[in-house]
Structures are given as structure tokens and as C-alpha cells.
Length: 112
Length: 113
Image (tube, rainbow over all chains, first blue to last red; front, side, top):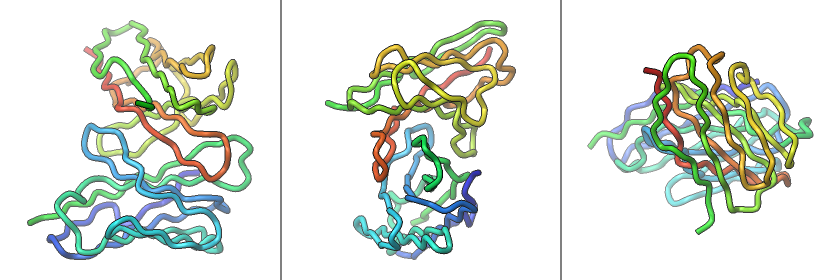
């Protein structure tokens, strides 16, 4: 079952912060975050494994609450280059086969 | 350089034609995947393969077929049974161990003319 992302779209000014949420109905082993520019392949940002860790990548960080089956992506002091569509991909604990199920995406637009 | 190569980048299909999209990886990954993406939409899984000579249907397998004769290759055929094939197709691969992430090719645009 597909994870639910929110919000669907967000518009920011340069320097503002944003949070993107990803929620699943299944117990998760890991959550993967990607950013995609139009017409290009998704680019890997980070992976969070169960254990509630928080990771960071420049001014982009994420958290994973395995009890709530939720992950959040935090973008601070946003830059124009952050524009794109952000996807979360989830890998549940029950599956024997490795596959990621992706959310429908959050379109982020950063304006000057 | 290691990576995933998809070809062609752009492809046009006539009504009633089958077309095949190529995907090759030199990452030595066991698992390979095909996703379809429609404009403004998320990624939907078509087929995936965990090992050579074995593959499983994803959420939207109807009208598609695959083969996995070699570890590094996972071609996707879009058959004439797929009534609305115009989309962006992404091939991906991943190591089979938990805790590893998925890597994508550059994608192929398929348009029906």
C-alpha cells in the first residue's frame, strides 16, 4: 500500500523552511527520500532505518518514527536548487522481497 | 563508471506495436525494477526481479512483459495490450540486503503516435 505524503505542494521564498511528511499503514524497516527534477531520474537524498534515527544532508535532514510509521523531511533555509518533487519510498518489515513503494510526491517550489 | 543505463531516451510507438525498453546495470545488484511515472504523478511499480530467471508482477503489470536472463539486464516490453502507454519509464536496481537503497536510470520517454 502506497505511503501518504503531505502536503501535495508547497511554495516557499528563498531562506524559508519546509517540512514534508510521509506516513504508512505498515510497519516499516526503512524510509528513503528522493528529489526529482522534471524529466529526470529521482536523486537519492537519504535513507533512514528503523531505530528512530535522524539524518542530515547539508541543510536537509529527516527523522523516522517507527512506532508511528512516519517520516518527515526538513528543509531549512531553502535554496532555489531545492525546487523539485520529493518522494518518500518505504520498505516494510514483512516483505520477503525487496521493493520500495513510493508516495505520490510533494512538489516544492522555491521562489527568489 | 558504475550505473544504470536505459535506452532509448525517447521512443515513439504506433498503435498496435510492441516496443522494448533496455535497462543495463553494472553495479552488481541482484534486484532490478521497472517503474512507470505519469505527468505529475508518483512512481508505480510494473515488474521487479530479485534474481536471474525470476520476476514478479508489480501493481500495474498488465500490458507489460519482462525477462531476466542476465543479472545485469532487465528489458521491459510494452505490448499492444497496454492501452495507455504514454509515460516516463524508470529502471532501477538495488542490493538485496535490507538497509540499501534503490538507484535509478535516467529514464525513457514513451509516446504513442
